[in-house]
Image (cartoon, rainbow, N blue to C red; front, side, top):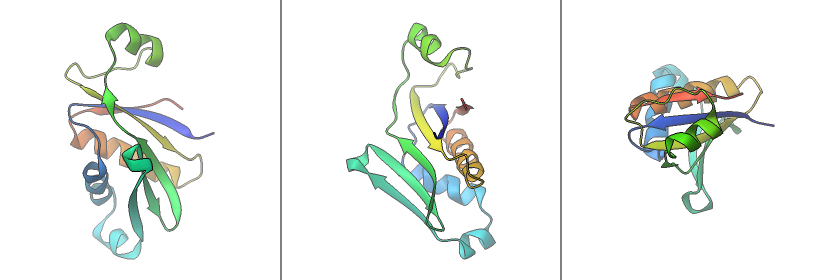
Length: 120
């Protein structure tokens, strides 16, 4: 079972946001030494970040943040920024490289004016 996170942001997380997150999380030396691929899946329904032939992050297509009652029902006490318009479900593995995926989720959420909530 993958580790689950959701990003609540002002702007949607897209391929460009993931590329920016990779550049923010990895040092220039790590970028030069690490093969990284960001690939869309299923006609844009999801995107994956692959490093050294391992999937470190899968991000589903962003959708509008649900109404407050639904937000509470689905995500419980998660703190959502008041100006968040988009929610994006994200999944990483429990393997050690999943930690990189979590850092990428955090960086992409921050870059798009929001925050990530790691659900477990």
